[in-house]
Image 1 (cartoon, rainbow, N blue to C red):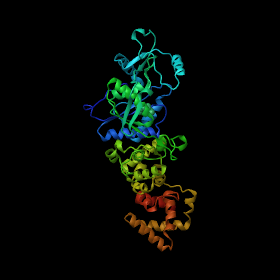
Image 2: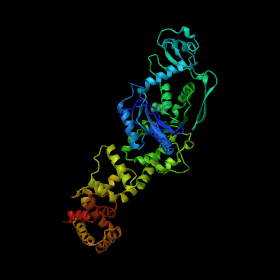
Image 3: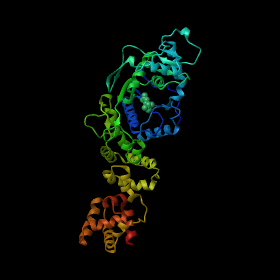
Image 4: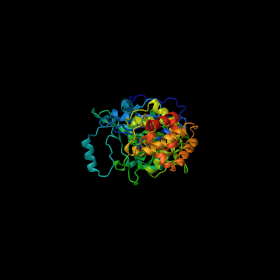
Length: 475
Ligand code: GLU
């Protein structure tokens, strides 16, 4: 998909509609922090009947790649975060950014600066620890040379810029510490700081929810909003995610890319729940679905302390969602997992065999690969090949017990109770424990020793398939 240039807000109702955005720089995969930022914006907008927009901040041409854009869109789609309209390309909007810079120059809130990099360096050397003050700020326009110039913001010199942050509270920046930043470089390219403000304004963004590493940027961006007389959006700067040891998240903590979680087999529904709790809370609620998250999610619930990754908790949340979601949702998650890990999709026959097994399987599985592992018995075609360990359970005495069991099961109703009763009767008649029956039964039905309960397998497989598998090893 190609991000488009249009940034016209659609469907805004008198400015009252909530509009959020996710604005990733396409320089790599979607990392877990970005996914959480996207989720917060998505939840906030969706819960309020608002719009959730996507802007690809691809102005750094050397580092931005189409592959990274694709990876980010794919990650968001996997996570189930649908965005409104086409993704906007920030780079494609450079002419608009330049137009605003010129408008600011015309209205006096910005000025042309002809200082060369060498002159700036010399100024800095002569004024250690001071913010750069361009001599062109107050120069007589008549003295402006016919030379390339950058456009700088005429930032307020006195007073303070206060960000009334929905998470951090009021954050105050001294204006004498913020220089007259460049808006448009002398080569005509806009700076990031200008681009973000123009885009957020043009896209009608009402709430900017992003990592608190952008808090200082907010002060500079607020100055541009103010200079243009545009209302500032609500800023909500969320604390970053830390690793399990409480330190800043890095590769050494493992799993920093969202795709790594997808490949590990955590369902997207569980990731949404888990990520929502990374930095946000609603009382003691740990487990919730999308509807509850949408109902509860609000900015005051976001904490000021960094959230910590906790893989145990994630497993727990994942197991809960696998157990709680309906069959169709679970099959969808399985399909997404197989796709993500490059495995073949389930065939219709496999799906029809797997579906009746889901009630038993979903109770125990914490992740999708665990579920698939337990479901192999249902998805394997006859004749079942027993592995070495399972084959040892199919010795002649055991096989004759299976023959008896086959006979005993001919007329049962094929309910779990009836099957258990039949197996218990055969065990008793042979003076053996149930385990002596279960082991060869596992081998016959699944060809392996680690399987779900034999009764779960038999009810899932049904009468014909079960008896056929038994006949294969006894016949
Ligand atoms: N492109 C920035 C980033 O990926 C986000 C900027 C913003 O949200 O304002 O960190």
